[in-house]
Length: 317
Ligand SMILES: Nc1ncnc2c1ncn2[C@@H]1O[C@H](COP(=O)(O)OP(=O)(O)OP(=O)(O)O)[C@@H](O)[C@H]1O
Ligand SMILES: [Mg+2]
Image (cartoon, rainbow, N blue to C red; front, side):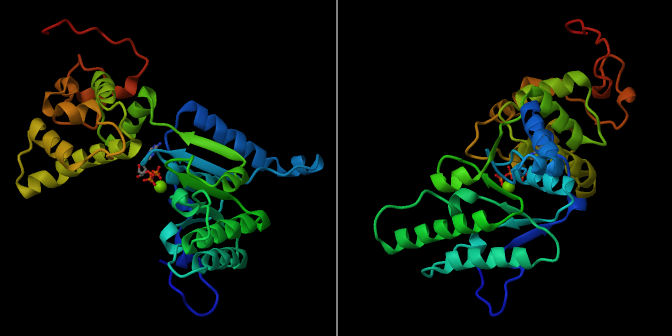
């Protein structure tokens, strides 16, 4: 719940401010990259658009499962525009007093307008704030509907960028939904993206190409966030495990990681978590992990030489 304080509100009363230099580029499927590039091109063409009486679109809704990169993408986008992003948390707006949530929304937009530089507004978990208006005259209904109307009025009066993230997409109030001119769906990553995500977060270690491909298949339905945790946990164990006196053979490390890093309950269980150590992808997982792809035994094709002719391994070789 937001803190009621005297005087004008500060941006930080509503959530974190993420600066452009802290952003990183998410690994995205081609349709999402194309949608993003199209939007950026439009924004950069603002002056040319004005000549034909148009303005670039400024409001987008990102929907996708937890951990698919909605926040990361919004931050990256704000950084591409050179703007700080205010990550608005619903709990900083929602309040139990009648009219207080609507009041908080007014104070938020006042603070954004008063900021010395333009702010890229990002509403996280937007469905919890902007759910469909309620029917009836209960206090809860009147209060929620007042919140929605205040949001609508403030969106209409605001000329800056607004992105909202939701896991569901269809629970939003229809009038709010219509305010978003662009809809971007962040689907779970496909095989190509999964391999790149694993490569990114395993670095500086590299996996041989066959191992990377097998691991990616075993992680079908995993979110990027889960893959990141998996890879980073392995690296953390490699550094910390020997100091802590843990068993450091491959199966011990991987089973600790699978135990620690759990898929989000709303998403399916990827095969690796289903099968555990018995998963067939692990037979190809090299140990110890190396940073130099060429240092693996010659019949393991390093992940970084993608595109080279891969010798087929004889069964039992
Ligand atoms: N597409 C991606 N490419 C690379 N890393 C990603 C990607 N998506 C998510 N990550 C990583 O996973 C973590 C969670 O991502 P993020 O917070 O952006 O997901 P989200 O969709 O906003 O999740 P939530 O629904 O829980 O808010 C971050 O550390 C981010 O670096
Ligand atoms: Mg998020």
